[in-house]
Image 1: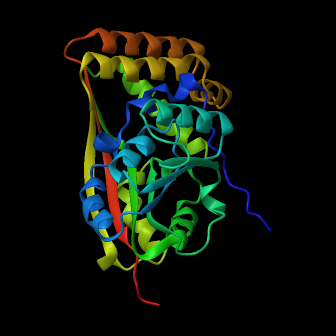
Image 2 (image 1 turned 90 degrees about the vertical axis):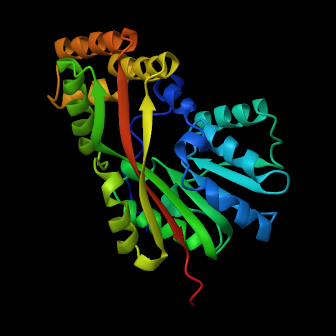
Length: 285
Protein backbone atom coordinates (compact mmCIF):
# COMPACT_ATOMS: atom_id res chain seq x y z
CA UNK A 1 0.00 0.00 0.00
CA UNK A 2 1.30 3.44 -0.95
CA UNK A 3 1.79 5.79 1.99
CA UNK A 4 0.18 9.21 1.56
CA UNK A 5 2.49 12.13 2.25
CA UNK A 6 2.04 15.88 2.44
CA UNK A 7 2.40 17.45 -1.05
CA UNK A 8 4.55 20.46 -1.87
CA UNK A 9 1.85 22.90 -0.85
CA UNK A 10 3.74 26.08 -1.78
CA UNK A 11 3.08 25.20 -5.41
CA UNK A 12 5.19 25.56 -8.54
CA UNK A 13 3.67 28.65 -10.15
CA UNK A 14 6.41 30.77 -11.77
CA UNK A 15 5.56 33.73 -9.53
CA UNK A 16 6.03 31.59 -6.41
CA UNK A 17 9.32 29.97 -7.44
CA UNK A 18 10.90 32.84 -9.38
CA UNK A 19 13.48 33.49 -6.65
CA UNK A 20 14.59 29.84 -6.90
CA UNK A 21 16.11 30.76 -10.27
CA UNK A 22 18.74 32.75 -8.34
CA UNK A 23 20.17 29.45 -7.13
CA UNK A 24 23.15 27.81 -8.80
CA UNK A 25 25.55 25.04 -7.89
CA UNK A 26 28.05 27.72 -6.84
CA UNK A 27 25.77 29.44 -4.31
CA UNK A 28 23.59 26.48 -3.34
CA UNK A 29 25.78 23.35 -3.55
CA UNK A 30 29.24 24.64 -2.59
CA UNK A 31 29.82 21.63 -0.32
CA UNK A 32 29.34 19.22 -3.24
CA UNK A 33 31.42 20.93 -5.92
CA UNK A 34 34.87 20.06 -4.47
CA UNK A 35 33.97 16.36 -4.67
CA UNK A 36 33.12 16.42 -8.39
CA UNK A 37 36.64 16.49 -9.96
CA UNK A 38 37.72 13.33 -8.13
CA UNK A 39 34.44 11.58 -8.88
CA UNK A 40 34.75 12.45 -12.58
CA UNK A 41 38.39 11.38 -12.75
CA UNK A 42 37.38 7.87 -11.68
CA UNK A 43 34.20 7.83 -13.78
CA UNK A 44 33.81 10.39 -16.61
CA UNK A 45 30.33 8.97 -17.34
CA UNK A 46 29.09 9.87 -13.87
CA UNK A 47 25.31 9.77 -13.28
CA UNK A 48 23.82 12.36 -10.91
CA UNK A 49 20.21 12.30 -9.68
CA UNK A 50 18.82 15.69 -8.64
CA UNK A 51 15.76 15.44 -6.40
CA UNK A 52 13.21 18.27 -6.32
CA UNK A 53 14.92 20.27 -9.05
CA UNK A 54 12.33 23.09 -9.25
CA UNK A 55 13.15 25.49 -12.12
CA UNK A 56 16.36 23.56 -12.72
CA UNK A 57 19.03 26.24 -12.28
CA UNK A 58 21.06 24.11 -9.86
CA UNK A 59 20.53 21.02 -12.03
CA UNK A 60 21.79 22.79 -15.14
CA UNK A 61 24.84 24.23 -13.43
CA UNK A 62 25.69 20.80 -12.00
CA UNK A 63 25.36 19.36 -15.50
CA UNK A 64 27.88 21.95 -16.73
CA UNK A 65 30.37 20.57 -14.21
CA UNK A 66 29.85 17.03 -15.54
CA UNK A 67 30.55 17.80 -19.19
CA UNK A 68 31.30 16.26 -21.58
CA UNK A 69 30.26 12.73 -20.63
CA UNK A 70 28.41 12.93 -17.30
CA UNK A 71 24.64 13.09 -17.03
CA UNK A 72 22.10 14.70 -14.69
CA UNK A 73 18.60 13.28 -14.23
CA UNK A 74 16.48 16.00 -12.62
CA UNK A 75 13.18 15.11 -10.96
CA UNK A 76 10.25 16.98 -9.47
CA UNK A 77 6.56 16.30 -8.84
CA UNK A 78 5.04 18.86 -11.24
CA UNK A 79 5.05 18.81 -15.03
CA UNK A 80 5.00 22.60 -15.40
CA UNK A 81 8.13 23.23 -13.36
CA UNK A 82 9.94 20.39 -15.15
CA UNK A 83 9.14 22.01 -18.49
CA UNK A 84 10.58 25.31 -17.26
CA UNK A 85 13.68 23.45 -16.03
CA UNK A 86 14.10 21.86 -19.45
CA UNK A 87 13.81 25.25 -21.17
CA UNK A 88 16.42 26.69 -18.82
CA UNK A 89 18.85 23.84 -19.50
CA UNK A 90 18.53 24.37 -23.25
CA UNK A 91 19.10 28.11 -22.79
CA UNK A 92 22.38 27.26 -21.04
CA UNK A 93 23.63 25.31 -24.04
CA UNK A 94 23.01 21.86 -22.59
CA UNK A 95 21.76 19.01 -24.75
CA UNK A 96 18.55 17.28 -23.68
CA UNK A 97 18.57 14.37 -23.03
CA UNK A 98 22.29 13.79 -23.66
CA UNK A 99 23.66 16.04 -20.88
CA UNK A 100 20.52 16.37 -18.76
CA UNK A 101 17.04 14.84 -18.68
CA UNK A 102 13.89 15.44 -16.68
CA UNK A 103 11.39 13.10 -15.08
CA UNK A 104 8.30 13.47 -12.88
CA UNK A 105 8.90 11.44 -9.72
CA UNK A 106 8.36 11.49 -5.94
CA UNK A 107 11.38 11.15 -3.64
CA UNK A 108 9.36 8.71 -1.55
CA UNK A 109 8.99 6.23 -4.45
CA UNK A 110 11.88 6.56 -6.88
CA UNK A 111 11.42 4.13 -9.82
CA UNK A 112 15.12 3.36 -10.05
CA UNK A 113 17.14 0.27 -9.32
CA UNK A 114 19.21 -0.07 -6.17
CA UNK A 115 22.72 1.37 -6.51
CA UNK A 116 22.00 3.16 -9.82
CA UNK A 117 23.50 6.66 -9.37
CA UNK A 118 27.00 7.86 -8.53
CA UNK A 119 25.67 11.02 -6.83
CA UNK A 120 22.23 11.86 -5.44
CA UNK A 121 21.54 15.51 -4.67
CA UNK A 122 18.67 17.26 -2.85
CA UNK A 123 18.48 20.96 -2.10
CA UNK A 124 15.73 22.39 0.14
CA UNK A 125 13.64 19.24 -0.25
CA UNK A 126 13.52 17.57 3.16
CA UNK A 127 12.22 20.72 4.87
CA UNK A 128 8.98 20.43 2.89
CA UNK A 129 8.38 16.77 3.78
CA UNK A 130 6.40 15.22 6.62
CA UNK A 131 8.75 12.19 6.64
CA UNK A 132 12.28 13.33 5.77
CA UNK A 133 13.85 10.09 7.05
CA UNK A 134 11.86 8.03 4.54
CA UNK A 135 13.14 10.30 1.77
CA UNK A 136 16.74 9.92 2.95
CA UNK A 137 16.39 6.13 2.93
CA UNK A 138 15.13 6.18 -0.65
CA UNK A 139 17.98 8.43 -1.77
CA UNK A 140 20.46 6.07 -0.11
CA UNK A 141 18.89 3.09 -1.83
CA UNK A 142 19.45 4.39 -5.36
CA UNK A 143 23.02 5.58 -4.72
CA UNK A 144 25.92 3.28 -5.58
CA UNK A 145 28.15 1.98 -2.77
CA UNK A 146 31.00 4.46 -2.47
CA UNK A 147 28.83 7.13 -4.08
CA UNK A 148 27.78 10.47 -2.62
CA UNK A 149 24.47 11.79 -1.32
CA UNK A 150 24.36 15.57 -0.97
CA UNK A 151 21.88 17.48 1.20
CA UNK A 152 21.35 21.19 1.87
CA UNK A 153 18.49 22.48 4.02
CA UNK A 154 17.76 25.90 5.48
CA UNK A 155 17.07 26.41 9.17
CA UNK A 156 14.20 28.84 9.51
CA UNK A 157 15.35 29.91 12.97
CA UNK A 158 18.74 30.98 11.65
CA UNK A 159 17.66 33.91 9.53
CA UNK A 160 18.91 37.44 10.15
CA UNK A 161 17.83 40.55 8.31
CA UNK A 162 18.34 44.27 8.50
CA UNK A 163 16.51 46.50 9.03
CA UNK A 164 14.53 44.52 11.60
CA UNK A 165 11.20 45.95 10.55
CA UNK A 166 8.29 44.77 12.75
CA UNK A 167 6.38 43.73 9.64
CA UNK A 168 9.23 41.46 8.52
CA UNK A 169 9.46 39.89 11.97
CA UNK A 170 5.74 39.12 11.60
CA UNK A 171 6.40 37.69 8.14
CA UNK A 172 9.10 35.37 9.42
CA UNK A 173 6.82 34.14 12.22
CA UNK A 174 4.04 33.51 9.67
CA UNK A 175 6.39 31.65 7.33
CA UNK A 176 7.53 29.33 10.14
CA UNK A 177 3.98 28.68 11.35
CA UNK A 178 2.65 27.96 7.86
CA UNK A 179 5.55 25.60 7.18
CA UNK A 180 4.70 23.66 10.34
CA UNK A 181 0.97 23.71 9.62
CA UNK A 182 1.74 22.14 6.23
CA UNK A 183 3.65 19.28 7.84
CA UNK A 184 7.06 20.69 6.95
CA UNK A 185 10.24 21.10 8.99
CA UNK A 186 11.36 24.45 10.41
CA UNK A 187 14.72 23.20 11.79
CA UNK A 188 15.95 21.16 8.84
CA UNK A 189 19.42 22.65 8.77
CA UNK A 190 20.31 21.60 12.30
CA UNK A 191 18.49 18.24 12.11
CA UNK A 192 20.10 16.93 8.91
CA UNK A 193 22.68 14.77 10.66
CA UNK A 194 20.02 13.39 13.02
CA UNK A 195 17.71 12.41 10.15
CA UNK A 196 20.55 10.76 8.26
CA UNK A 197 21.66 8.77 11.29
CA UNK A 198 18.04 7.68 11.80
CA UNK A 199 18.04 6.46 8.21
CA UNK A 200 20.83 4.04 9.13
CA UNK A 201 24.00 5.84 8.04
CA UNK A 202 27.13 5.42 10.17
CA UNK A 203 28.44 8.72 11.61
CA UNK A 204 31.88 8.13 10.08
CA UNK A 205 30.28 8.34 6.62
CA UNK A 206 28.83 11.82 7.24
CA UNK A 207 30.57 15.11 6.46
CA UNK A 208 28.54 17.96 7.97
CA UNK A 209 28.77 21.73 7.94
CA UNK A 210 26.84 24.96 7.48
CA UNK A 211 26.73 27.38 4.58
CA UNK A 212 25.02 30.70 3.98
CA UNK A 213 23.02 32.72 1.52
CA UNK A 214 23.25 36.49 1.49
CA UNK A 215 20.73 38.77 -0.22
CA UNK A 216 22.22 42.27 -0.17
CA UNK A 217 22.98 43.39 -3.73
CA UNK A 218 20.08 45.33 -5.32
CA UNK A 219 19.26 42.56 -7.79
CA UNK A 220 19.30 39.91 -5.06
CA UNK A 221 17.07 41.99 -2.79
CA UNK A 222 14.65 42.54 -5.65
CA UNK A 223 14.45 38.82 -6.50
CA UNK A 224 13.80 37.82 -2.90
CA UNK A 225 11.49 40.68 -1.95
CA UNK A 226 9.28 40.40 -5.02
CA UNK A 227 8.91 36.65 -4.48
CA UNK A 228 7.86 37.13 -0.87
CA UNK A 229 5.34 39.80 -1.87
CA UNK A 230 3.89 37.47 -4.48
CA UNK A 231 3.49 34.72 -1.90
CA UNK A 232 1.71 37.16 0.38
CA UNK A 233 -0.51 38.46 -2.41
CA UNK A 234 -1.56 35.26 -4.17
CA UNK A 235 0.25 32.30 -2.67
CA UNK A 236 -0.63 29.42 -0.43
CA UNK A 237 1.03 31.21 2.49
CA UNK A 238 -1.67 33.89 2.36
CA UNK A 239 -4.54 31.42 2.04
CA UNK A 240 -3.32 29.04 4.73
CA UNK A 241 -2.36 31.87 7.07
CA UNK A 242 -5.76 33.53 6.93
CA UNK A 243 -7.77 30.29 7.03
CA UNK A 244 -5.80 29.06 10.06
CA UNK A 245 -6.08 32.36 11.91
CA UNK A 246 -2.32 32.86 11.79
CA UNK A 247 -2.62 36.29 10.17
CA UNK A 248 -5.09 38.84 8.81
CA UNK A 249 -5.55 40.79 5.58
CA UNK A 250 -4.39 43.94 7.36
CA UNK A 251 -1.26 42.27 8.69
CA UNK A 252 -0.44 40.88 5.25
CA UNK A 253 -0.60 44.37 3.75
CA UNK A 254 1.85 45.54 6.42
CA UNK A 255 4.21 42.73 5.45
CA UNK A 256 3.98 43.67 1.77
CA UNK A 257 4.88 47.27 2.61
CA UNK A 258 7.74 46.00 4.76
CA UNK A 259 9.27 43.99 1.92
CA UNK A 260 8.94 46.96 -0.42
CA UNK A 261 10.79 49.16 2.04
CA UNK A 262 13.43 46.47 2.55
CA UNK A 263 14.05 46.15 -1.20
CA UNK A 264 14.53 49.91 -1.56
CA UNK A 265 16.94 50.44 1.32
CA UNK A 266 20.64 50.44 0.48
CA UNK A 267 21.55 48.99 3.89
CA UNK A 268 19.11 46.08 3.63
CA UNK A 269 20.47 42.56 3.89
CA UNK A 270 19.21 39.05 4.57
CA UNK A 271 21.35 36.14 5.73
CA UNK A 272 20.14 32.52 5.85
CA UNK A 273 22.08 29.61 7.35
CA UNK A 274 21.81 26.22 5.65
CA UNK A 275 22.83 22.84 6.99
CA UNK A 276 25.03 20.94 4.52
CA UNK A 277 25.83 17.22 4.53
CA UNK A 278 27.73 14.87 2.25
CA UNK A 279 27.19 11.16 2.85
CA UNK A 280 29.53 8.61 1.31
CA UNK A 281 27.51 5.44 1.02
CA UNK A 282 29.16 2.52 2.68
CA UNK A 283 30.63 -0.21 0.48
CA UNK A 284 29.98 -2.81 3.16
CA UNK A 285 27.47 -5.44 2.14
